[in-house]
Length: 323
Image (cartoon, rainbow, N blue to C red; front, side):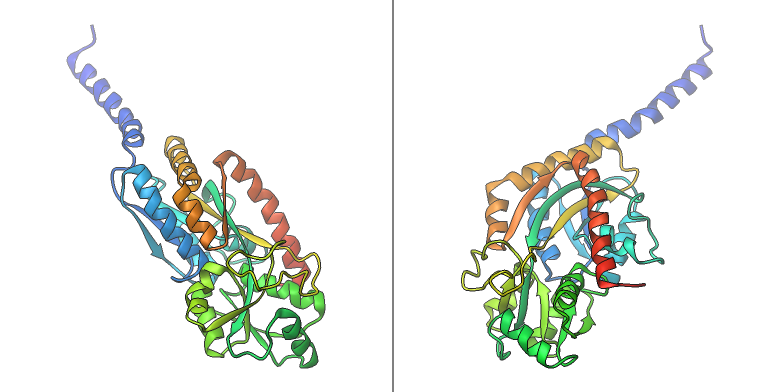
């Protein structure tokens, strides 16, 4: 028989080993924070708040959204990469800090491929080219004609240097040989306010980002980058209808945890997000925002990110974006 002191020591070790398993099973036992790496008001922010509400109901926990804008999403992504890998700090983002910035930024303070655990791709969205209501052009074809006739006169805003909203317009500019000046902001919200006020002329944005200003009569849509016209904007032409062929573009949104988050917690989040994105409530909400629910499990999401990194690298090479 083992001495009593050895038995007590062994029981203590067993107890310590049991704590992580118990913690995983009890998850979540405290509020979950979703970091959105852009300013409030953008499409990522609007989506995050809708998802947070439904995720909280599914998990039976409080889920809060915290905006950490700056550097086209890098600041918010860095905060999540450095957070404890316990499932209580998540990142909900567009492609920018994960598959765009790493292709040309040399000073990122995180490794996009190694510092995050991809949980689920949840939705995608097409872009809208928007301008202020009193801008002379009524559609994109007319705007492009004006820009071609006056090189360097017109400006376009974005959610930040290196953001997908910049790259979409850069692709159009390069494709058609149009000379326009880029004006970056910290998020789509501030960038669109600049467009509405006349500080900048146009922006490639999304319906959720522009909805408030559009409904208030301060913005109008020039064209959409989807194959078909938006239900919410039936009078607005597609890019092909505007004379720009092969310009169907979209962006995805995904949820990430810090690398090292226990597998049971990742799986619980994956399952919960799958239920959220399949619910009639969230699909109705997304449809009203011209978004498409696209739940993709953590197993498939990781492989998808590899192809996305290459896709955005190709785009960056085409537009010549440099650090």
